Length: 327
Image (cartoon, rainbow, N blue to C red; front, side):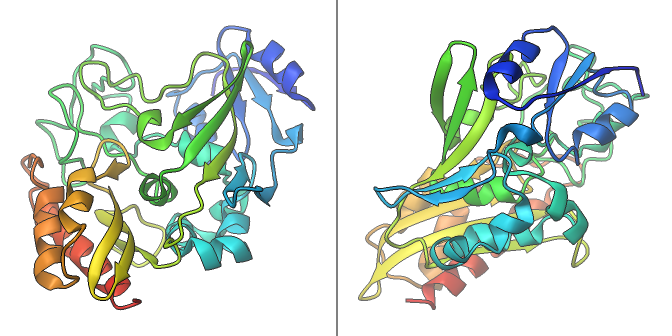
């Protein structure tokens, strides 16, 4: 690990001032960035500890939306009574991720910034455009069983690893930011970037900007939701495919739907086309299967990961079926 300066801050103004120094990184739980620093993938000159900023509350706003502080721990969010009752898809996604020890340390904001687990990204002996711009992608000709089939490019096929982000994508969360020039918000669908020709650019944060909170909209039907994760072992494993589903069904007809996929996309994958295909249709297996086909219609298989396309379809159908049975 390279030497670095450690700075602990107690207010946002001090954090912004410290972040103006080139080579600075914020740290909260540190469950990802510390690993990356040990492997010399991340080499910050300064680490700014933001745990003293107080962004650790879960609040219900006057309009019914839920505001989640960026420093709320994953375990606290998963077991929050309001989240469990109103957004079970988010609680289930959080509990499907990592281990209990990691969930007790990892934060909401840090989870948004979590980087890919592509093995070629983590091994500095191999080329990786995400790690070193223009160096090449070793995953495309290499062993790519765990890599993405949606949103890929000829420069990168790395998956986004987060479970939490898949649920937040389905719920249409809003990310609140603070920077030297003030505050702003980004819709969740616009926060993470597709790799395209610039896979080293992963999000829409500006230099020095800080995630302060995530807002969940007050969806009247979000209690009818489910997160389903397919993986090689039952715990402490990243998704091969996952599905976050929210359905509003009245008299057997689907009136509203939210769908996002994980484990198969280069970013948390909201499928608007699959959602549209469900609205106005009778709830049932045939409708769900057509939606799954729509969700994976643009999938591109590589040498070792073609199985993910059918796996993702079946995972989505199973999740839709479970939520459909709640109505």
